[in-house]
Image 1 (cartoon, rainbow, N blue to C red):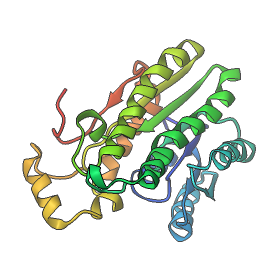
Image 2 (spheres, helix red, strand yellow):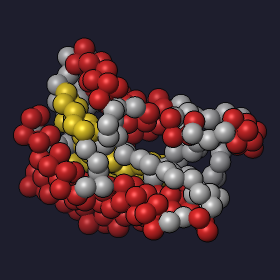
Image 3 (cartoon, one colour):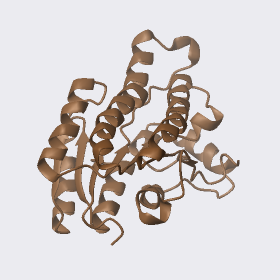
Image 4 (cartoon, rainbow, N blue to C red):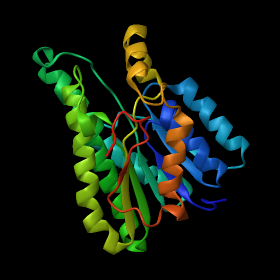
Length: 248
C-alpha cells in the first residue's frame, strides 16, 4: 500500500475526478477528508465506500471560494484525522460563454473557485506541513490552461494560473520537504463535460488522436503517482493525461 498511514484531503471529492482519486488513495491505505458543494447524497455514498475499505473518512459541505470555510475545513481535517500529508486541490466549476458575454459575476465565480480558493486552501495545508518538513500538494489544472479553449476564456486563464502557481510554490516548498505538482487533464467523462452537447463531444472525440475521452480512474492514477513514493522526483511539474489533445 503506497499511502498506508497517510492523511489525504481532497476538495471536490464527492464525484468525478475527486471521487475517483479519494477511492484510489483509500485503496492504497490513506484516510480521507473531502469536501463537496450541496452534494450530500453522493458524498455519503463516497464516504461509505471509503469506510468499507477500513479507512477513516470525513466530509464537509462548503464552497471553496469562501476562504474562511476552506481554512476551517483544513483545520477540522487535521483535528479529526491527524496531520495532513496530501492535499489534492480539485474543486471545479465552469460557465461556458463567449468572451464578450462574460459578466463580472461569471468571472469572479470561476476565478474564486478555481484559483483563489485553491490558493488559500493550499496555503492553509502548507502551514500545517511546514513544521514537519513533509507534505504533498497536487492541484487540478486543465489542458485548456496549456492551450486555451473558445467559450472558456476565464476558465482557461484560471487553470493557467494554477500551473504558474504550482511552479512558483514548488521553488519555495521543495527545499522545505514539500512536493508541489499539478495535473492538467484533457477531456474526461465527468458531469462537467456532460454539460456540453452531444455534437460538441462527438466533434471533440473525432479530433483526439486516441479517439475517446479519458476516464476519471485514469486521472486518479496520475494523482496517485504524484502522491506516492514513485513520484518523488516530480517537482513543479504539470502532468497532462489528455489523449493527445496537447502534445508538449
